[in-house]
Image (tube, rainbow, N blue to C red; front, side, top):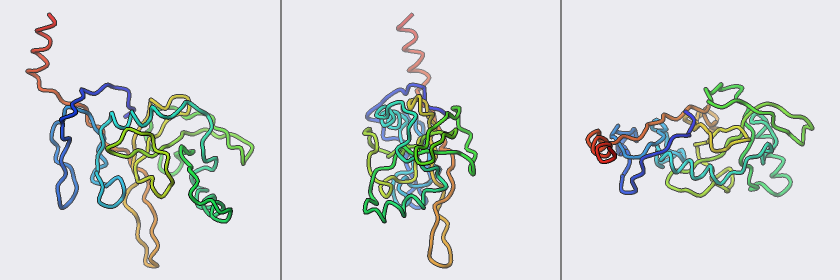
Length: 207
C-alpha cells in the first residue's frame, strides 16, 4: 500500500508490542498507522519488527525527485559492483537510493515504473528506486550498505512521497557456511485506529 494517508499522531502511543520469544506482533490498536514486517527484525537480528508510517514518510521527505539512482547497476549486478568498489579502495561508498527492476520478486507495487538512466550502460531501463528505512528515526538514511538493514521503500523517481514498503525475507543458510538474503516481501500496513466515541464527540463539537 502506497503511503499517502495522514496518521492520527500520538507521541505518547507506545505502538504495537512484540512477543519476547518470537518477535511476532500482538495486534493491539494504535493511534498511529504502522508498517509490520511480519516478525522480521529490521536489522535481521534483534531489532524492531515494525515502524510508524509517519517515520517512513519523514525519511522519504529527505529524498529529492530524481531520475538518477546513486547506484546505476541493476539489482542483479550488485555483487559485481561491490567487488569493483573493493578493488578501487572505496567499499563503503553510499549507494542508495538504488535501482530496482522488480523482475524476480514481482512485488505488487502501487506506482508505475519510470524510465531510469544507467550511465555506465549508456542506456535506460524502466524501474523504481529503493531506499533503506530505519524504524525509530525521521532522518533520511545516508549510511553504507552494511548499515542499511532489511527494510526498503520503493518509489518512482519523480515522487518519493508516494511509496511502498517491503522487507527482505529470512536469510537462506547453506551447508558451505554461506548465506543469502531472502527475497523482498511487502510489509503489512495497519491504519490508525481511533476510539469511535472520541470521533463522535469531535463531530458533535463541530456541528
